[in-house]
Amino acid sequence: MNILESIARLFDSFLERLDILFDQTRCRLGGDGVLAVFLSAPALLVLGMFGVFPLFHAVHMSLYGGKYGMGRFVGLANYAEALRSETFWHSFFVTVYYAIGTIPATMALSFTIAYGLHRIVRGRGFFRTVYFLPYVTSAVAAAMIWRALLNPQYGLANVVLGYAGMAPQDWLLEPRGVLHLLTQGHVPATIGPSLALCCVILFEIWHSSGFMIVVFLAGLTAIPRELEEAARMDGAGALQVVRNVVLPLLSPTIFFLAIVSVIKAFQAFNNLYALTGNGRGPVDTTQNVTVYIYSNFYEYQRWGYGAAVATLLCIAIVAMTLVQWRLAGRRVHYE
Amino acid sequence: MIGRILLYIFLAAGMAATTFPFLWMITTAFKTLPEALSPSLHLLPVQWQWRNFIETFQAAPFGRYFFNSFLVGTAVTAAVIVSSLMAGYAFARLDFRGRSLLFGVVLATMMVPFEATLIPNFAMIRRLGWYNAYPALIVPWCANAFSIFLMRQAFMALPGDYFDAAKVDGCGHLRFLLRVGSPLVKPALVTVGLFAFLGSYNSLIWPLVVTSEDTMRVVQVGLTVFSGAEGVRLHLLMCASTIVILPTVALYFAAQKNFLESSLGSGLKG
Image 1 (cartoon, each protein chain N blue to C red):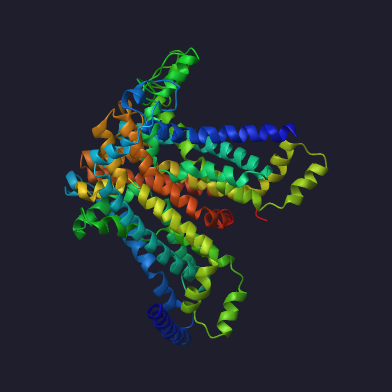
Image 2 (image 1 turned 60 degrees about the horizontal axis):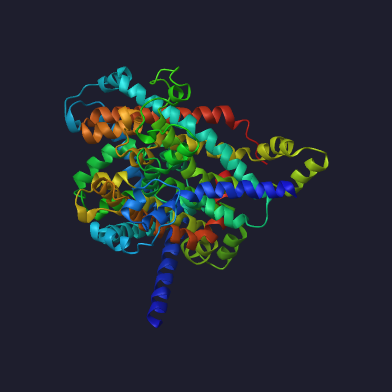
């Protein structure tokens, strides 16, 4: 105990010395520049080394051909190849399907549940805790459960379909499109997302709703109760209160979640990889852009080409974010 | 009144959908293999097979996987807490040239997909000689933009009086940060720590890419390999999933009061 105390005191006086030192540089230079560099150095060093530098390295690498990015300089040939490649565009559409399938549904569901939780008092903490559970569990372990439930031979999903008098499905192993299956074959099997991809989308909605619920609930709690009550007093119905009072006041939260989830959807990988075993799924129908990058990197060792596709993905994400910023940013109400 | 009951029914239905896969996992983990593989709605095992857990640990070196995951997760969590506490304070409370530009760059790194930097990062790890070693699993994750952002928001939300009072008492920035600041932003720190541990513990691709030896595997990689090798030994697979999920759920319950208190929601708004 005594030793610990004296160490703490020693550390304290050490910090005091440092503080005095930084204060002197401050007097000489004006501004806290030196102290700021000292404090942010660890974070910036790591971010710079593993976040920013690799980005430039990837762009550089994308200009080279051959295996392991060791081939000759090819200029923009890798980009041209990607943009001409049918597989690339297919993977791009898988990414888009995934984003369209997950984001609006997760948002609507999470908001509904969060608003429900906002309206109750008893049990709110308990429900919130439980709803958040899938989010803290690893996608890998959760995917093991879903794979078992959706297994065509012994999965529970087909048992339930059987009780409902419907034909069993191949779920995660089904390359045919959902539209094809739903219309009994009127739509060609290759049009639209495959059933396998839809299973991944459903998994993602289940896995990540908890995060949105917690963020929505925090946003709802920040809304002054009087505003809702005043609207109700004036004779507004429940839906009108939500549409005209709650949603506008929640727009900063919605805006934040929209931006984050678009970025997340474009970066999706773990779910696909864990649910399908290799990310590509049946007949490559779940191969999105990130899985495509991974395949080129890991299986074909085409580092230059993979880096080119990665750069294209970055450009797409930045463009999406900027578009959202321009379109929705001005419609967001801050108090 | 009826509306309230319907609301509770709706919330309970949502909860059932959320938890059902977990309940199924736990009960299946206690079944015999033929029982686990016979598709039916009988959820509870006829007899609870506790020895499934022993068999799971015998089937794969999960002890080693857990050791690796905890070592890496703890190191990452400690590093993220320190780095984002310091950087968050600097961005929130210090006055220096290029602050907003630098912060903008930090935030922009959030947009970069991890897979985009995967190839160059892997090349760097090879060059550093960290392939199949702990630094490869730890160092790249020692700081992230989201944590810095959260800590900055937490420090910005503190009333300025604290800083002024400390200054009057002759307390410099560093001592203030350690003595006064950190206890005040504890909920945010717990949130950052929780997310750092979860992120590290639940990560799959990076450890899969930078390790190849069985002794260096973390639990997520171990579980993936196990599922491939075990195939249809479903009861053991569910056992393994249960023990992989358990630590994060326990940690979440331990941290959740601070976590939910934290400015996660309001902090995210700005």
